[in-house]
Length: 101
Image 1: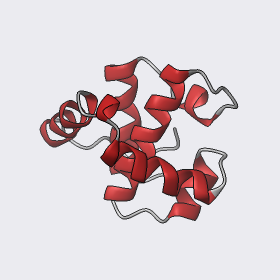
Image 2: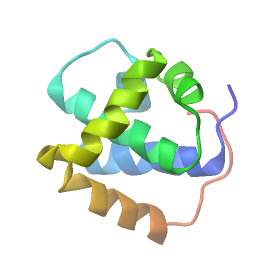
Image 3: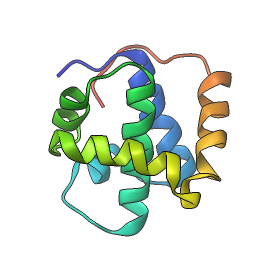
């Protein structure tokens, strides 16, 4: 699957902020810190216009997990600290070249 530059920037920002690699997010782990990063990534990808099936395919999840993640990021206070910081990081960094994560 080809990943566009904004998606690569999202993966890099999440990795830098939360110290969770793409491989960990796409893996089977249900550890809270990895799930937290995965949900934020799904939310940010959705904000970039990605469809739920495309997000799910990239992160090896069912599309309903991506739907739930996006809803949860908006209502859970646990995401309130990281989301604005990630958005600021994405707004301030130049987009990377297109590549697969």
